[in-house]
Structures are given as structure tokens and as C-alpha cells.
Length: 589
Image (tube, rainbow, N blue to C red; front, side, top):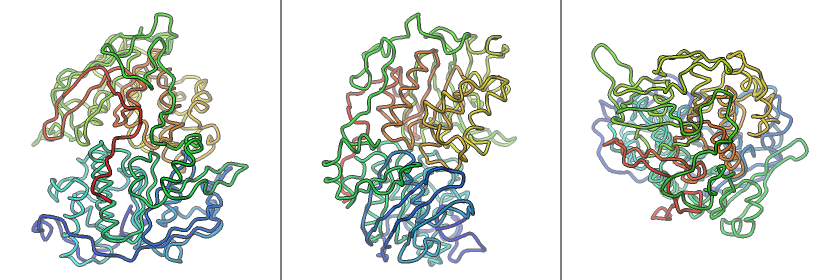
């Protein structure tokens, strides 16, 4: 495990066995190579505790656990239970914080995790933090090169790993910057598989993937672990994907000022899930078949329990409290996209940007939800950034209606033009708020409290909403914490809260339920239904079918990367009662 990146040994000079995609890599044979057997790692925790600097409670407390070599373990627990901290500690990358407190013992193969970095591969929650090099093949080869794997074997491993994670169709010199978030997640996994470590650690590995990608990544992990004999530890909130692929489930309890935390449940998957369903549900674990209740829209059917009708969600009643005094009535057009093409590439004198998506029409209306769905790589996030005014369209146009672009003295808004990407930041933020796929990209201060206060202060507004948002999104106990020390789920809730602090009229969220346990998922969805009833428009880029159903509204389904197009625009429909994707057991086990 690297200190300089998510996998491999630390960066240094030229790594042994390196080759550029145009050289040995370009001549590699097609097809997969069976993983060689490795010596599986052993994990032992004895009363292990980790407490971040400035925190009242430990991130992980009094953890006593033994994972035998070759075991496959699924680690569950509510948001903030320390699951990611545990994995980072095993990978030896918790950092050198002199003010943090560590107690007890944590060992990999009998030694300190930092001494075993070459034996461990970690895939983290944030896809962006795991991309090391600019070309696909080089990035996958990085860890293996730094482990001194022979050159001819490296590129066999690279091709096999890319095939396993569903990226084998891309050339080895494909730029990593042009990959979607879900594709970057697969890329990180491919780099780990190419290392063939004795301990594979996966932190929410399928959170940003479409249903087909979930299957591919899970099966690739299980197949490789079985072929190599490596020990596997997976952290997930949702159980259905992995329950039939692991030997054991461990549930962690969150620490608090009066409770150390540690292991809540530990046993065979069927025993844990059958014997403690109610306990797990109360703890926030996604139990198969259990859907957390979500506040229904005002005067709308309870969407958490029944499919929508052909008309979609009814509009708010005329007496709904407006989000602020100048908000337009429900149903009024705020934003529209007309035959839009999108790209993250920048135009140059010699080359125009190549669109990843073209011909998109969409409307965003006050008090209505719009879900943007489709496979990884279809251009969903890029379209959302374009709709939000953060990218200029390369074709067509995005226009703000007068209800959004007009002046509102009560909110301190001046009139602006109809083109959002031309607005100044102080005009954009209180009108269109964007929650990025990677929460850390939005943090600009050193405490949660200052993050929540940042936008209102910049806009010259009061801080009245800060306490309300902290309470509603379960951040009160973290107000003095550094945002970068939060769990993945806590970071996501903070990123949502920082945007809502500016009271935008259009809220655009990219994978908003990423990293959420069942309890915080329901609280976030319920909060968003309140915002919808108050007149806010909510646009969500998501693979989460149940979240889409809970908010109601309409769905913009984008096509495949090979032929991006709108394949369906209409009311959200679903008859599922399970918030987890339908995952067949398949051939993996």
C-alpha cells in the first residue's frame, strides 16, 4: 500500500518493469490471465482504538477482531461507525497526526500495517483520489511496477484486470481524465487486481456503479480473490450485493462520548441477517427487503410503498410555504436544455471538444424532481454540471427562465442574463446549488461549522439556516471536526448542507445517497421532499432506484456511451420494494 497513492509502493524513481502503452503494453495478448496464488494475509485487532484530533469520540473504539487468512468478510455498520477508518488503518495510510490517539493493537501478518504495505491493496470511496497517471494502462500497471513484477508479466496482468472490471474495450493509452466516476472506480479496482495482494480492502466499491457495473465489479473481485486465495474485506452499506459471496459478516457499532463502539455482531451471513434483522435495521444497516420510511410529498401518494401513476407526482397545493419570499410557484419553468451536447474537454485552436452526449432536451421546474439515470460513462455528471452553469454546452443551449434569472430584492438577487455559465459566482450560488460526486471537492475550510457558514457569509446573508441544517443532517456533534476526517457518509451530508446553506432555487446532486446508511438515507430523502414542497427544484444524478421513487417527479434516462441519447423521458416507475439492486448470485462463487 502506498503513501503517495491508493495502491502499490510509494512513488520513487523509475519502477522496475515499466513500459508505456505504446511499447510492450501495446503488444500484449488479448484475453485473461488466471491470478497466481498468493499468501493470504491475517488480520488481528485487540482492543484497537483510533480517535481523530479534536474529536470527542473515537472513530473506532475497542475493536477486537480476527480475520483468518483467505477469509472473505463483509463489514457493515451505520454511517460514522469507523468502517473506512478501519480499512485505512489496515492499509497503513491513516497518516501521521501527532494529536490523534491510537490504542490497543492492529496487525497484518503479525506486524504493523505500515510495514505490510506491499501486501495490501485498498480501493477508497472517492474515485478521483485513486487516479495516479494519465493513461489507462500506466495507471493499472503502477502498483505492479512498484512491486518489481517482471515487465512481461505486468502487461499480462493489466489486460486481465481491465477485462475483469469491464474496461477491456478501452485502449491502454486512453486518458484517465476522460473516464466517468464509475469508470474510475473500476480503474482503481483493476490496479489492485494487477498487484495481486494478500489482503484486498474495498471501501464502498460499487457505490458509483450502474447495476451492470455492480455485477461486473463484484464478480471480478470474488473471482480474483478465489483464484489468488487473498483475504478479502469489503465495506458496504447494502448487503444484497455481497451476502452470498462472503464467509462472514461483521457489524460495527459507532463510538460516542459514552460508548466505545467495537463489534456489534459477528457471524455467518445467514445467521447475522436472520437472527438480528430488527437490530440491524435500527442500527441503519440496509437489510434486504426492508425499505426505510420516507416523508411523502404533500398531497402526494406515499411513494416509498407504491409506484407512481402516469401523471407523476402532483404539484404542491397553492398554500405550500415558499422556499423564500421570491420563489416562483410550483410547476414554473426554471431551467431548460435545448438539444444540448456536453463535454469536459476544453476547446483548442486545433480541436473542438468531443461531446460525450448530444441532443438532450430537459426541463427543470419549481417544486419538481428530475432524476438523471443511465449507465456509467453516459455523460450524466457532465450533463448535470452543464445544467448547473459550471460547464458551457458544446452544442445547443441551456437557458434560465425569468423566474430564475430575474431580480429578487428580498433575497438580494439582481437580474442576470439567461445563460447560467456566464453568471458570476455570487449570482449562480443562490440560484443553482451543485453537490459534486466527490464531497471533498467542495470543502474550503478546516471545520464543519465554518463550511456551513461559508456560503451565507460570502453572500452577505444571515446564518439562521446553519443550525437547522446541522440538526437535520446529523452534523451537530461534528461542528468542530475537520471535514476531511469525516466518514464518507458524513462528508456527503456536509456537502449537501453547505450547498443548501445558500438557499438555492435549483439543487443539483450527483450521487446524493452515496455512503449513506438506511437511516441517514431516509432522513436525506425526507429532507429533500420538504424542499420540493417548499418550491425548490431537485435534479439528481443517481443509480438509486428507491431514492428516485421517494422524490417522485420525472426521469431523464440517458443512453449507452456508444450511442448517447435520451431513451425515455417520463414519470418515474418502479414496483420494487427493496432499495438494493437486483443482483443474481451468478457464477462468481
